[in-house]
Length: 197
Length: 240
Image 1 (tube, rainbow over the protein chains, first blue to last red):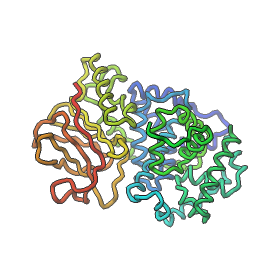
Image 2 (tube, each protein chain N blue to C red; image 1 turned 180 degrees about the vertical axis):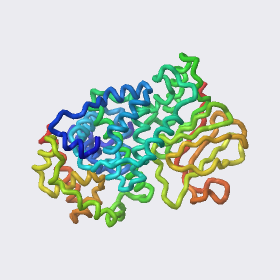
Image 3 (cartoon, chains in turn orange, green; image 1 turned 135 degrees about the horizontal axis):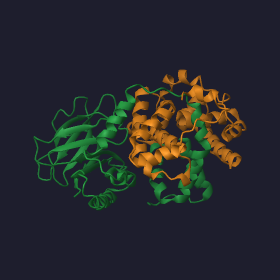
Image 4 (cartoon, each protein chain N blue to C red; image 1 turned 120 degrees about the vertical axis):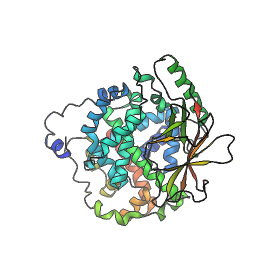
């Protein structure tokens, strides 16, 4: 169940957890299904939320809200649009991103003042652990495609997706002009799409 | 929807979807895009493809064991969502309509509630809430809280999202009937908190009664009236 355990068993078949059946059961009102999902994924979901929210208490708030939303919206899950596990992670991640962007909205009136908001001093310590070259085990296509990007551009993608950084925060972190970062990200996304199809 | 800029070009649409999923859109852009999604299948499909492409990157975030408080808290919120007599058919519970509410305007919400009423009428054994209030953010119309009342003397306030409150501020809960002189405070509310309140000091709950959450000082408004910006607002709708 733990992250470590999962990595160590990567060559073995994945433990079978039927995410789709779980969502169907939630939609039927079977609370036990949500309990099972919590046991299966709460630590990884909290990891995703914490990385973006940068605060343990806020991350738990987000995961709380995510589980309520999963419960309430399970019936809207459409397997034709993607995997059930992906739906759960995307829902949680977007809640975290929205929470962060909403906080900013309250503080900043003008979009252009984004540069003025630089709480990065508090983050630097945590970010040292971020080394894009140490990908998790597995043969996910995205990693192969990221390898083909210039390291700085690869960092932009990882900082944005995993850390929830804004353009301005990435520019600050990489000590690169904002316009350059925006252009890098645009082109990197385009390259990733070409690479992954 | 509204006059959307011409990013109907597939490449532009895909680039926008990519930035949304990557997380580099700002709050306003995110909200605008989320409002378009239900109406624009091409955009939704582009978002879905980006979600699938980037999903494995979530493995880069180290897992974090939740505190022991988290599941009990989720469970309490789930229980608060359950009306006392659970219906046999889960699909007719009113909150299953919540997905429909997302992104809808106030008018749309009223229509949704009408639909909910139609569903209940087929299952007379249930005792659904007599009144429902959906509290939405004034700008985005995003639902943030729901109030349900099984009778006219008690209400229950249920959070739906993460309400962000600056550390030196508090959310204060207010209500005002149509013919009242002014709003009356129902006390302070913590983000994420489920709150059950008797309305014994007030006239019974009535249709169209206004409810709102405003941002006030840490101990609430000092004037007895709302002074800060409205965070969420809605009116009571009778559901039977």
